[in-house]
Image (cartoon, helix red, strand yellow):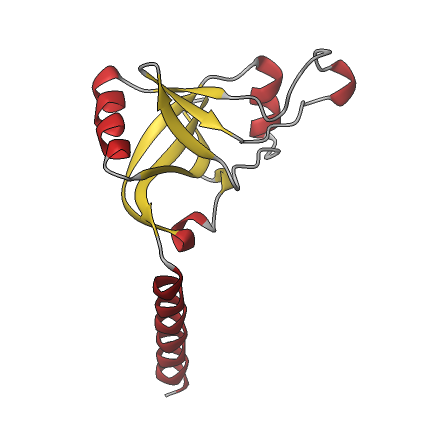
Length: 147
């Protein structure tokens, strides 16, 4: 499955321990726009409110700007489609200081799905260590491939 949108920064900013797949409740023109790859999940997050999961701050522009509804908001809050026990599990995790971060949006069986990562934010020194580790691994790969 080719991703329609990817939040590449999420795995750097957060230590993702597990992932969960959820459906997205979209309007018709939003589905067309998302399938065209015009979706941005950078800077967005998910929350649990009122026994339901919500995606906040994801941008989906209208498919055709001139045919969009008059009061359409591209950054509106969208409901995530999950089972009740999955929502309860996520609610428990968020009380333990975990964050819900969208990682990928993709199409599966003609449905728009989103992969939500459950993780804790990384501290600044952890990010520095990760960059050093990646640089060392890259150097090792370069030396190994040269031989």
